[in-house]
Amino acid sequence: MDVKRAMDIYQDKSTISVKLEGEPVWIENVDEVNGMATVQVGSRPANTQTVKVERLQEEH
Image 1 (cartoon, rainbow, N blue to C red):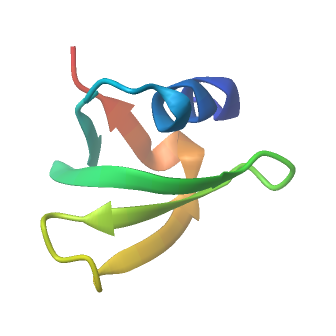
Image 2: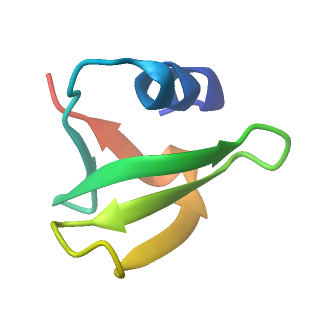
């Protein structure tokens, strides 16, 4: 995924399925300058990771 698409998903009001290495994640923040995203892994709010947006995959 690219930074623009990550921002679109982050700002969208609907639920868009995104995965990180097969695991469902929620995008919590996107750092456009550095191409990074902070994501919540699964349903545990405390389980967050900051990853390159290229590692995120949108489910179609």
